[in-house]
Length: 195
Image 1: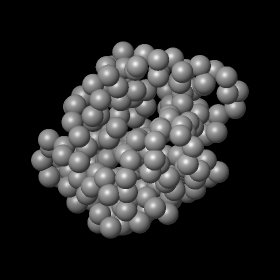
Image 2: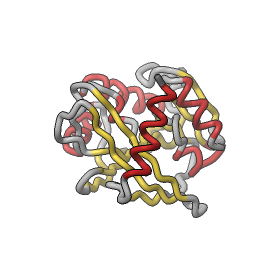
Image 3: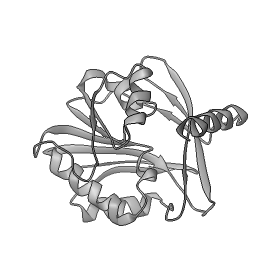
Image 4: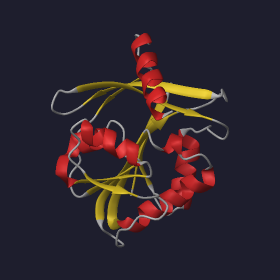
């Protein structure tokens, strides 16, 4: 089933000539935990060995490793990460919140991210705006890395309770103890940073 999913996602990405999202990433400084880091391993490719990649799916971690992502990989549920309080300078979500189905679980992951961040730590996230409720939602993303590498991929979810937008994510992050530092919403995606 996983192989079929990968094939379908790659086929859909090739069929779509224009990505819905274009993101240019910059290297983040400090010790980073990337939550939902598997698959493309984008943050690990951007920040290298200063990154701890967390994913609940071993297959996604294996895929990121096979693509050259140099993170230290940890297989775990992001609601219960095996790290000490205040371990990281930065926490990131790169198109991974959409895979966390309910607002309650998203909030729990934000609480856990707050716990593992230093008191002056930064949370950065990029994700899709999902308005409608189709059975399958896919967003195509073109990513420019600091070293000039270009990645073109798709992120997709199926099932109910997928809707998300910047307002919902800001609300959940604030309820988890964060303060909004910056936020921008585009037609199909959003980016936000919190302290």
